[in-house]
Length: 246
Image 1 (cartoon, one colour):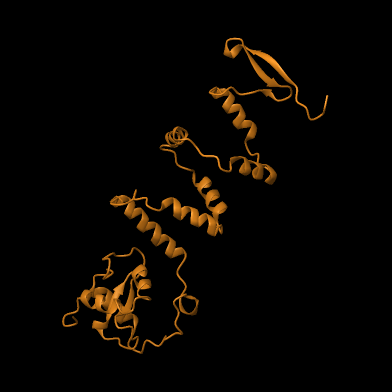
Image 2 (cartoon, helix red, strand yellow):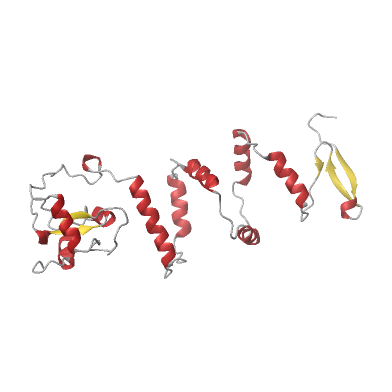
């Protein structure tokens, strides 16, 4: 017999009413379509594979085998239901984050993602709940606290550096400006937790430190004033609460 040939035999499987089934010698029984492993069998398989990792060759083979494969709507629904209420553990989330760190989509993948979403309006009109908005806001604040944006020459909007604010732009003056606006951003009205508001020059003249030329901004909106410089001065003047400044 050729070494590459396979030995096929007929076996009687009592689990299926004594029906004849085809099996390959040395490979075990072939799973019948629609059959399910018992809970005990699944537990044994899980224990046997615990801690094992696929080789790079095996991962490549699995990727090729799944290429072009599409999951049926029924299978998608079963997967969705099976994951309802489940949340990854902190350890699992850390592993997922580390695995994706530094990875970038290729231009081809980005083009496919853009084409797939084109014309989809599934988020149109949807709004986040107040709880979700609070969680998102807290997550952003935590991120910026741990990863502050670059300043000076390191910032992508750096324009050569006019760093001289003049002698009057003191911390006392900035505190007064924040107090006038009750420590809230003049654009969004938010009061950042644990962070001080930036103080922005409305006319972009850093030597013009008059009180009516200064407004407090959260970090997010202050970064936006780096562009559209023809728009922000007029907008911020309307937001200025100092009497006689409008």
